[in-house]
Image (cartoon, rainbow, N blue to C red):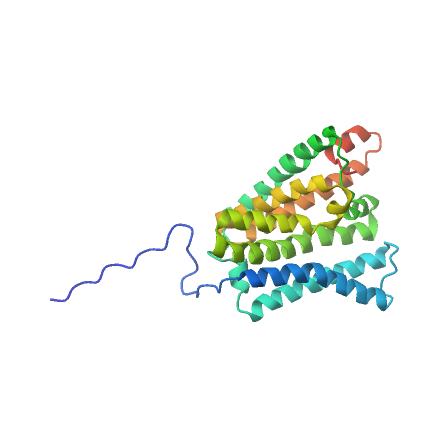
Length: 266
């Protein structure tokens, strides 16, 4: 009499992937380091080439903004191509499971909460202590309006969240997590994430605390959901609210005190 084999063990909760899809290739620490280096040095290299051929003139005009959008787009495209050629793109975007509707809601809520807690509350504390907020060109461009505002929004709300989450969470954090575990990976990748924001480093380094905590939040969202959809959406929402309130505050010149409170970097 033949023995009936036991049923297969179901995957752990939160580890489910689409039936029949192969497991993604893990992203290595080397991938993360290469992509971080390319994110920083690639922009310097491409901007230098643009400067050499006369595509930019360092005046900060609309032409320079177009070049910056083109450079970020090229960095994003090449990052995607690198991961795809190494067979690690799916492992970077959805290491444990594909995005679900509740992941998107979690990302949306986290972006709003991060803005309230980290940017408004913590930023206000820093100002009360006596630290001046960092100057950010993208926010100034949004306030001025026109094509420059559209280009700034394209960079900060569309390109930067996707590119930075792919590099810092999808690649660097995941590579470190495989070797050291979640918390060491989250702390290291968040520190690097904060450090590459040179505008903040040069103008008001204490505000790097906000960026570091944002990085930890985005790493937790990746850990919680198993994919990059929630971190990208949270990052996008955080930047979008920042720019939206900067634009709103600039339209009410008689409410300078309110504008300074709501948009502390203004």
